[in-house]
Image (cartoon, rainbow, N blue to C red; front, side, top):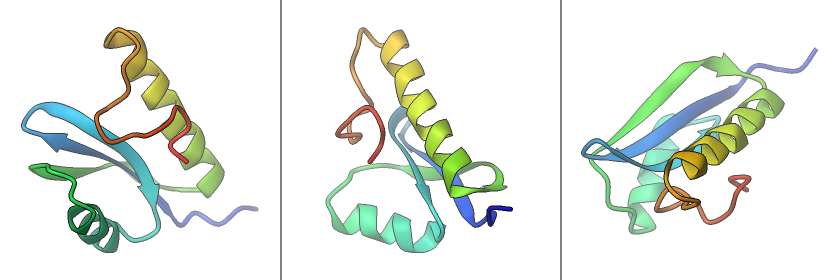
Amino acid sequence: MATRDTYKYRIKDGNRIVYYGTTNDLERREREHRSEGMDFTKMEKIGNITTPAAASAWEEGEIKRYKQQHGGDRPKYNQNDTGK
């Protein structure tokens, strides 16, 4: 059975989603994003901790859904369609 050690999260600037991601350490990842120059107002944990595979599938699905709702554009800081 796969270990459940991965968080799903989204980053928002105001009400606008600018990034979807996964991590095993939310606080560290938020610091990393800020040090990389990402401009945002909050990072929100989504749902419960899960397996890496399930989190990755969620991330890819959220980026795809975002693109469908925003004329094919990804969230501002997601560099590709898979999140990887």
